[in-house]
Amino acid sequence: MVGLVIVSHSYKIAEGIKDLTDQIAAAHKGIVCAGGMEDKSIGTDATRIMEAVKKADDGDGVVLLADLGSGVMSAETAIELLEDENIDVRLADAPIVEGAIAAAVSAVCGSGIDEVIKQAEATRTVKKVV
Amino acid sequence: MSTRIYDCLKCIGEKIIENKDFLTDLDREIGDADHGVNMARGFQAVIEKVSQDEADIGAVLKKTGMTLLSTVGGASGPLYGTAYMEAAKVVAGKQEMSAEDFKLCLQAAIAGIQKRGKAEKGEKTMLDSLIPALEAYTDRIDAGAGMAEALDAACKAANEGIEFTKTIAATKGRASYLGERSIGHQDPGATSATLTLEVIRDFIKG
Image (cartoon, rainbow over all chains, first blue to last red):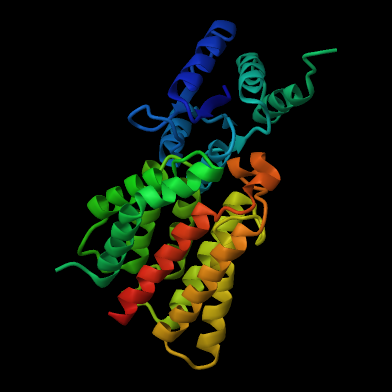
């Protein structure tokens, strides 16, 4: 199953998103949080993201969902740190909450990584006010 | 006995820590008031975690980059972390750094920052100090100058870069939300990058 890593500046945001995905895609056991710093303070840490990716991967690849600014930069750094590992890891260009839920549902239904990314990124254009 | 590269990094760290409040105050004007605090925390960890007797300069710079990635927290973490790690690749296995090596390190560091931040010169970032510094350094080296003299020119260009950041609006990072209101303030990242170059210059001059 395609793994997911939730990258946020905030420990609580990452955990909160995982609470949501656990509710909506309960059978998915490969969703890992990488929120905040090691001591749970605000920030992002590429090495923690790297470890989270290793944990989330079962061989089918891992999709990263990141919040803004250095969340994206640290996620991209983590992908580079994993260059020598045999893991298909990619960053979804998607809003973190909507993207995580779409990706979790897609992954738990057995989609491959291309489809999971596609579903996550499709949430970018979902209108909330019509 | 610690190595020269460790001693130099320690000097950079001490300078950043000494300027923690200054850098944070600059960042309060246009950013999220964390640059000094984050950088000081990162370099405190560098001083503590990087081996004092590792002779391989590449290994030392790589460890410095990894430590910054995992301790800085803000945008300067992946930016400076990547810069040090890209520089590390240039001098992997080397125990001495020539004037030419330093040029290649600075070049690689800048390329890493550009890759990570997707920024160009003129966007009110550390690149506004680092790119002119590299150009000035390269000019002097190519003209036959020594490393200390070239670093003098680099620091002068970097300081002019800081002045330049006061005249432009930010288009990257949190400061970009301020738009035109960011004009008049100097960029904290350009400032910490210039402080770093000045420490290296002073260190080389001994």
